[in-house]
Length: 253
Image 1 (cartoon, rainbow, N blue to C red):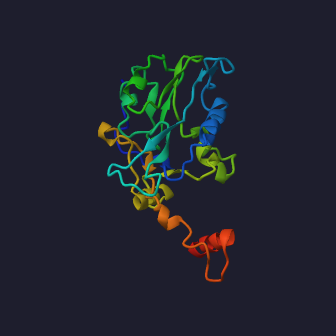
Image 2: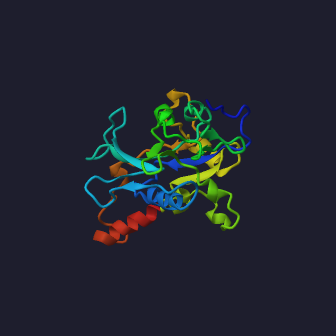
Image 3: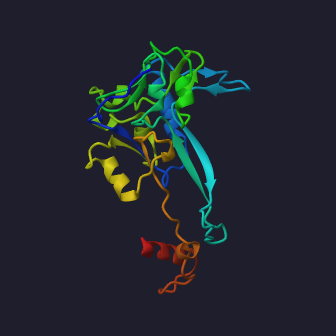
């Protein structure tokens, strides 16, 4: 079996995902597929892409849920239920069970930056790592016969031929809502560490004991419908209708 690094890694590179901002547009999913199909490792295959039974390999997927708070508080006519989009990829756990279960050493955690990768030349496609991962973050590529997972775009973040602004994972660079952020969690002054501290960043399924590096920022409380509605149909200047509503909105900005 493969061993994890014996000492804490000097860097802990990972992602912060803001669940309050993510709109579930899947731009990160498509960008990830495109970059990794032509980048590190073999291409991400698709099976019957134009047929009735489409399947394929993705390193990043988005799951959408309708969420109701535990206290059942009702705000306005629609209540406090909301749609939360949960992007999910490898979390590059500090205690990664996918690494320690690998019989060939194909799955490993880098000692320099903590990124978990798969050496496809050693992978025998046994699937043990996928069974061990509690997040379902690994996928078997049926064409290549090896396991695939998020690489944090390791072939991109250290690529000095790219502009500095592009040396981030493809999903981060693509996100139109700025819901994804990349940085070093070992540095308390990094952008991701500060966001986690200020917003109460959470681990996904902490009860599993894997100590995931990636963090999620929880959705912010919603504004009550009565507080966001126009205060009056007539403003102090006597304006009515749409322009009165617009004046009210601008006053609150």
